[in-house]
Amino acid sequence: MPGVRVREVTGDLLDQPVEALVNAWNRNFVPRRLLLTGGISGQLKTVTGPGPWRDLARMGVLKVGDAVSTAAGDMTGPKYLIHVAGLNIFWRASAAGVEACARSAVEKARELGVTSMAMPLIGAGYGGLSPDISRAAIYRGLEAAAAAPAGGDLDVVLCAPSGSLDR
Image 1: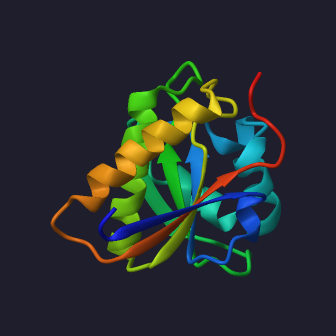
Image 2 (image 1 turned 120 degrees about the horizontal axis):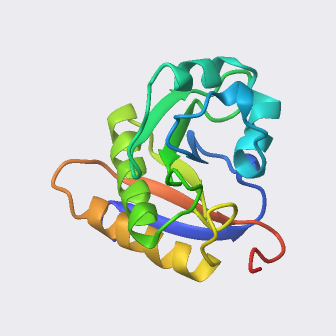
């Protein structure tokens, strides 16, 4: 893909040497303090401190596919978190929503001026999609973003967790 280079890895998203991490999030309509987050968001919560989550809450309700950014808080390494609304109001993901999330994440990364970001298989955890469906949707979103006239080069690390997400 011109302008967007993808490398797939198996491992922990938080261990990737990148400038931004993508956090697969919900639509932001339930206050964070009421959520028992798990997955990537749960991991991030333990390393970032409360700052990014307060900032995220101030951004209001998101549409599926939207991307917003916050600083990475107390986390060392990445400068930014790019939060994508990958789940609908029923806490499910769709291929179209994941595709929009990937496209929006690239647009947000370019807006921030970063050259590298790591992204999980959006929707393949709590969202209920298979890893293969998530991966295919992400690639479609990345291709659409790469075709956009504006934007510099971006290295994307697509992270699949160790072990299988298939249910």
